[in-house]
Length: 295
Image 1 (cartoon, rainbow, N blue to C red):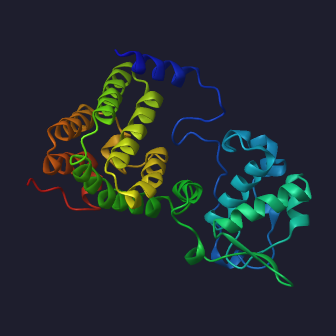
Image 2: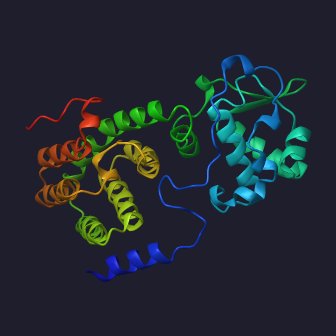
């Protein structure tokens, strides 16, 4: 095993940052309330009683302090439908409910406004915006949707986007010989193989995420690179069959290796085909998009 592989696996095991593995974050339990109950002012008491203090849910805060934790809580409640469209959000009520200062509430609402989840207007106040206004490519919103009532739709949509982005990225990457990047990709496959043998899912998922991110970067298309966050988010919200990458198998590992070989050979067609086959490892995915055709 290479020094890089050993370092990455050691870091994964010793990590104590408060982040759990993919799908393992301590999340707000989404209540699928009937539509009729989602009108008028927020009824905070209907939420999980354990949310009475934001600091109790630090595991899902990504280490961003109280305002980051509040963003997480409110964002999940909005995306889940607990706080429906056009609901008024009164800063004073939020502060009292979650026991945080006005400054924390104000900063949190600004972040949610930047994501398109809420709007603040003079003489109207802050209200929840409809889904059509949300920035659905925002990594936080992707995660919140993937673990809420819309989980099936979110995973299907992510799968369809990956089928659009990654085969093209693989084809383009084969035309941009970068020995340093190709070596890094080979290293990631080695790490994934060793992690799979050790049953180390966390290290496998981290190496997998870096593999796909590097592949998009080496495609040398800035617009595709801008979308790399979608792929990273898709790999992080595991728990459903989005792609073969999520369940380490000999087949998925083999397809990763074939992609690396195709890049080294400068064979764009082979790289694209291998990526399509990787994304279709699971039968469930084939119902979303057609199985790849051999070129």
